[in-house]
Length: 202
Image (cartoon, rainbow, N blue to C red):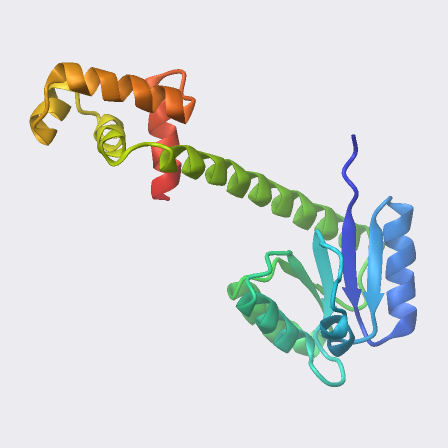
């Protein structure tokens, strides 16, 4: 089933908001528009967005201030800034802080759509990775402390004998822990387990 996509548009120019909404709609992308950053912040329950188109210069809270607030709240939506030529240094600085990209007015429709689609793909890939990491962490949390010790040493490349010597237990006990670790982690092979542990370290 095709995923529903939501793009947030924040721009104080109503004509720009409407043209962006229609452009996105023509590409089967749903959008919600706000006339200002303050209007967005006043919305108690905005939808979960896949991308945000954010004007830098606006009355009241400007785009950069909203971006800083979103980062403080650990909101992970990719932000594409809409800028005038004089705002390019500000947009570049925002990218260094974690914004996804920027567009300079006037921009081409194709350029905007390419950037939005790229941002959405990036965001969904990141979310899938976080979900997988969460599942791996939950499995690891289901292991006993000793099983986690064995798992770490297995991932470090130690043999059963080496693990036994390192932990001061018998090789047979290591085999039992190893079997439990593989089962609880859902790992079909040692290389799979090594990759899982590597993800947890990162």
